[in-house]
Every structure is written in C-alpha cells, then in structure tokens.
Amino acid sequence: MGDSVTSLMIRPLLVDRGLSLPDIGWVLGIVSYSARIVSALIAGLLIVKLGRTKSLIIFGLIAALSTLLYIIPAIGVSSLLVIYTVCILVNATQSMAYTALLSAMMDKCEKNTAATDYTIQVSVMFLGGIAATVVSGMLASTMGYTFIFIISTVVSLLSVFLITNKYRVSA
Image (cartoon, rainbow, N blue to C red; front, side, top):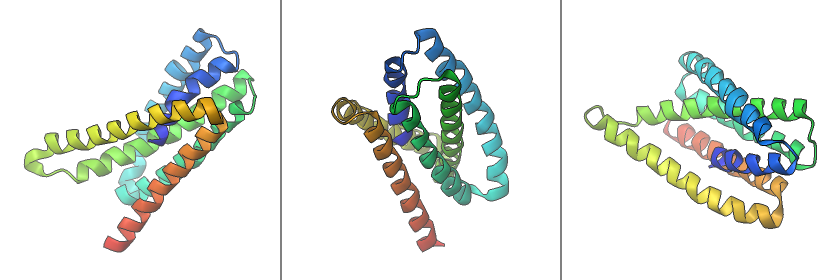
C-alpha cells in the first residue's frame, strides 16, 4: 500500500513544485523506472544470498524508511538534483522490496495451482493499493503531502513488523 500511495501522490506533488510535464516524465518515467529495473536485478541476486524472509524484512524496512525522503519536496524543496536523487532512491528501494515480496508470494503457491494462487495474491495486493490511493488523495487534500508520506511510512513499517512477528513465531 505504501508504494501505491507514494507513487500516486508524488506526481501531483511534483506539479505543485513547478516541474514541467517533461521533467516529471523524465524523473519518474525514465530515470526512476530505470533505477527500479537495476535495483530489482540487484535484489534478485541478494535474495539468493540473504534468503527470502530476511530480504523481505530488510528491503521492506529500507523501502519504508526511504519513503520519508519524499518529505523533502513536500516541504518545498524544488531543486531538480534533489528531486531526482530522492525519486531514484525511493523507487530503487521500493523495487527491491517488491522483488522480495513477489518472491515470497511465489513460495506460498501450490505447484498444481501456482498461476492461480499467484494471481489471487497479486490481485489482493493491488486491491489494497487501490483502496489506499483513494483514501490518500482525500487525506492529501486536507492534511498535506507530508502527512501522507508519514502515514505511508507507518503503514509500511507496520507491515514489516507483522512479517517479522509471523516469521519469528513460525521459525
């Protein structure tokens, strides 16, 4: 949910900071997505070394905390260098967390129904993201971007806490 909220809310924030549509296209569409691809590949290599559970927790924690970087443009910083740096870091870490999450989801699939099991899990994930984005838009208009990024971080940290608790209990 945290990634869904931040991915949605960063766009209007960048408009509010005065970035042009081509600037936003470059920073989010080309540069940040390129960082996502590279970091997903790196995450894939690290998951093999660290294991799925440890990777899910570590990458989830780093991604959740990196979301707080979006507060920098939220408080008024509009330097392109800063915005590029923030967007690259947040997108890269979120991609690593997604890679670990999707890998862990694959582990929960039965061999005979793997495609269906995985599709259901991804669908539930996206439904949660849709609900979060609807609420985030309403909250951002009343509470501001900073509040949304803090709430998104808290929700993401709560998810990491729940994952940590589940695997500690079952280990």
